[in-house]
Amino acid sequence: MHSGQMIFAQLMEFLPRHEFNACVRRYGGDRRPRGFSCRDQFLCLAFAQLTSRESLRDIETCLRSLGPKRYHAGFRGKIARSTLADANRVRDWRIFADFAQVLIRRARQLSAQEPLAAALEQTVYALDSTTIDLCLSLFPWAKFRRRKGAVKLHTLLDLRGSIPSFVHISQGKMHDVTVLDQLPIEPGAFYVMDRGYVDFARLRRFTQHSAFFVTRAKRNLDFTRRARRKVDKATGLRSDQTITLAGVKSSQLHPEPLRRVAYHDADNDRRFVFLTNNFTLPALTIPALSRCRWQVELFFKWIKQHLRIKAFFGTNPNAVKTQVWIAISVYVLVAILKRELKVERSLSEMLQILSLTLFEKTPVFQALTLENVPNLETLEPNQLMLFDL
Image (cartoon, rainbow, N blue to C red; front, side):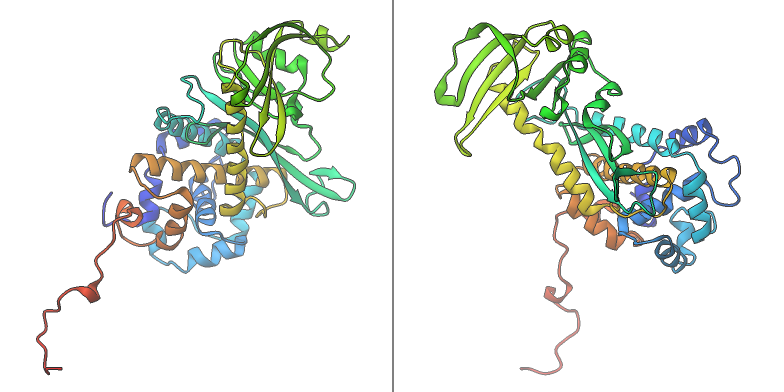
C-alpha cells in the first residue's frame, strides 16, 4: 500500500469500483445524486461501522471535523445529516446487497483452501437466524409480538472462513423454516441446521437438488427402521440406521429413506439424534458436522459486539436493510484484508486497530502487523551526556 495514503483510502482500494458502479446503475442509485453519490453514502456508513458511530449527527460531526482530510480519504460529497438520512430512506438497499455479494464471492475464493473441523472436501454451510429487537413505536412495520418489534437475520454461513453467503432480513414474526423456500441450494454441498428447520417437504428439496442436509431429529419422530450398521460405542455413537418416515403426512412429504444417527456426548452427558440424507459419510462425521454449526452462532455474536446492527440510523425498512448490508460488507472487507495481506491478528483486533488509525498515513499492513515497533526510548541517543551520573 502507498504510504502517502490514509488507511481509510487504502481500505477502500480493496473494493472493486467497477462492480460497485454496476450495482448502482442496476438500480438507478445515482439518478438524482444532488452532490451526494451512492459511493459517498457507502463510505459514510462504512466509516460509521469501523468507528462505532452512534447516530447520523455523530457521523456528520466527526467527518466534518476532518476538514481537507475528508477529500483525501475518498469523500466527494457534502456531508450533512439530513442528506444522509434521505439517502438511507430512498436509495434502493439492493445496491448494497448486490455489492456485498461481490465481496462475499471474493472472500470465499480466498478462503476456499481453509480446513474444516470435519475433514470434508465439499462446501459446508451452517444455517440459522438471529433476532434484533426494535421499538415497535419507531419501527411499526417490524411486528414481532403484541408490544414488541424485531427483525431477523437469516444467515447461511460458509464454514470455510466463516463468510455469510446468503442473508435474508425479515420481520421478527417470520418463522425460521420458511427461509428454506428462498435458500439457494448448491449440488454436492452440506447444509447443517438445528431441528427448528425440520420440515420434510422443504428438506426434500435438498435431495432433489443433489445436496445434503444434517439436522437434529425431533423427539416425536415417527419412523420405521429398514436397516442398521454397526457402530463403535466407545466413540460415543449409539446407532446408525436407515429409516423411512411412518407418519401419514410426513411419509408423503418425504418418501425417500433417511439416515438416523444417535450419539452420546460424554462431556455434557447428553444424547443427540441426527437426520441426514447422506449415506456415505462415516457415522462419526455427522455429529462433528453438527458441532460446526456453532460457528454461525459465533458469527452472530461477533457482528453484534463489533458492528452497528442493534441500533439503526433510520426507521424505515430501506434504511435498516441498507445499514445491515453495509455492516456485512465491512465484515467481509476486513476478512478479505486479513487474507490478502496474510495478517495474523484476529478480525476483532484488526477492527480495533482500524478504528483508531483510519486517517493516519501509514501502510495498512504496517498498522496491522504483529511485529513490534522499536521503542525510541530504548534506542541509544545521539546526544552526548552533559554530566556523569
